[in-house]
Amino acid sequence: MSQLPDWAALSALELARKGLPAMVTCPPLRTVDDLGLVCESLQVTGSYKVRAVCHLLNQRRSRLPPGGIALASSGNFAVALAWAGRHYGVPVTAVMMRRSHPWKVERVRAWGGRVVLCGDSTEERTASLQALTEQGVQIVDHLTDPQVLVGHATLGLDMACARPRTVVVPASTGGLLAATALALKQIDPSVRVVGVQPAGANAMVESFRKGHLTRVDEVATECDALTANRPGELPFQLALDWVDDMVEVSEEAVREAVTYLVEEAKLVVEPGGAAGLAACRSGQIPHQDGTWVVLSGGNLAPARLGHWLMEKQTLAR
Image 1 (spheres, rainbow, N blue to C red):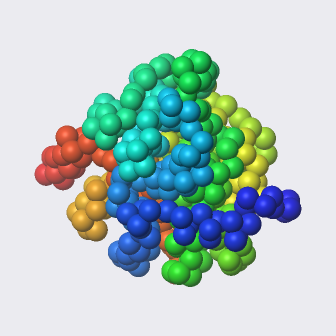
Image 2 (image 1 turned 120 degrees about the vertical axis):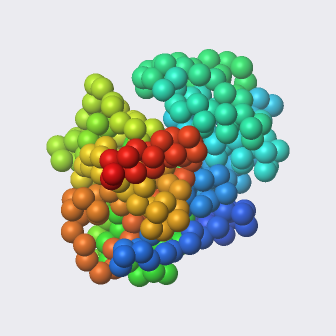
């Protein structure tokens, strides 16, 4: 295992946790059918991303240019950025892909964030961000900035009180997965951390199995928060050291998990946020005592949820 840089030390992660606003809470920890649920979907912005954005703005807001700060996001990071921009009084811009769910785009605007729409490739997002730098906006590259991972890692600190034996985490570029493992395993090295991706957007799974960064040419999933076509280099390198395994889940398993959470746990969780539970309920991850599943986001459009519930009722007749 590689030597940790100073920013990744447990003391640095704990300091970041202390600096988060009071509204960014320790997530409720619930048990349903003997499975632990980490309800990060109930965060103030509906996902864990608010942790990283608030940590970044705690560090940078006194030194930002007049144009403020920007980042690229398919949805939840953008929503968190908009909320934090209002909270701290900072101008913010979210570069969002055209495939981003319209409901999330409107949530960004509702919080006062500026939205710049671009194409769906990493290259198009990079070009849009570069154009913003020429307008005097500071860019956050969440794939390379270690402080983003520090913010994500505060979730691992909050989970430690549950004394988990296995932790299941959804993955897109791999930031939350790697950061959660980084925090938890410094507290208890015996904790097993497993990442989950939908089969139609499995770049992190493929990279982990091959041991090198792998890009997928096409992404096809309803998990709109997990649509990265390649992992971030820094999260991936950390994952190789700190993550134990990666698994894939089907779209059907994800839908089942979303509707199960509504019906049995009374929780609204978006498809990507429910991917970890889908892996457990479909048998991809064997059940054992002390398993906790991160429900990473709850930003699910009401109409979409209603359609899935009605569809399930129709099939059950």
